[in-house]
Length: 392
Image (cartoon, rainbow, N blue to C red; front, top):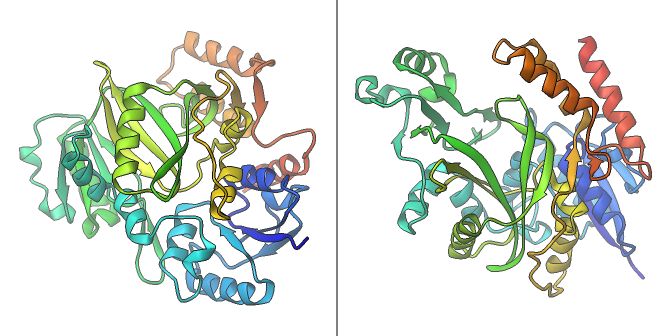
């Protein structure tokens, strides 16, 4: 039997490693992995049949497109799985290089309708999905600070990665606690001078996400988890997470949104749940997410399901899975602990509690994200990179 040849990009990402371990267990697939590094975490997995190094997608996007166009001719891949925002968007923007049939995504127009937070906010308002109150601007010069009455205020770029035609500009969400901070941010942040952004009200509460897979507008899988620890500690990427039940209001709003755009592929819909229980839509990530391995461990194998619907198999809706499973990114958790211990924002009691929690995890329900006994080389490569970066 001729095996399906699948190329997984961005293989130094933890999300990509989860994809590699998932697809690599399917006997009918020959798996190729690639990244811009000489060696990568996912490329070190036993499930990677062959590894390639390519030009940096962020620094040399046009060279990367030349590379992948050549590889498609040489290897004749059946599918390509990008695992970051810039790789997926760049390929969707380049149909003359990579035919969209190779990509398990919605169209570029549909992807950008959700990835662009300004467009997303307008669309969500039109279908009565709660969003934080937002003022939209094309550049910092349009902001009249004296009209901003309520603080803190969130400065949110429409796009986290802005394509400039031959390069990418990185942006970040910022919070201003008062007018002086807002004025400083508006003056000193380069991308705010000519890129669309919003000033949003700050929602007191906690973050919650819903993860979904759609097949040409039809729901295929839903899953949720909660973040227990993050890096940085005040809010960032998950370093310890736990599979959680689907919250009805969040599920209803996420489904309403994805149904409305006839979504296809995976999506992470993020909300901020206010103190009164209202879930406010914050953003949609139109790609695989960092803690993907937890969903797989809990019984929702998103990469395998995406592969099945892409080759035309019918998949029944999955919305039941094992709850209270935990996933720990050990080196990320170590960094988070360090940030807590050196910060003046935490009391001695809080620091001690965090220290105890780090060294006494829930052994029976917690698995490591990168380190797996049956596939240990990715953890060795991650540690090598970690130590190398510490020496810099």
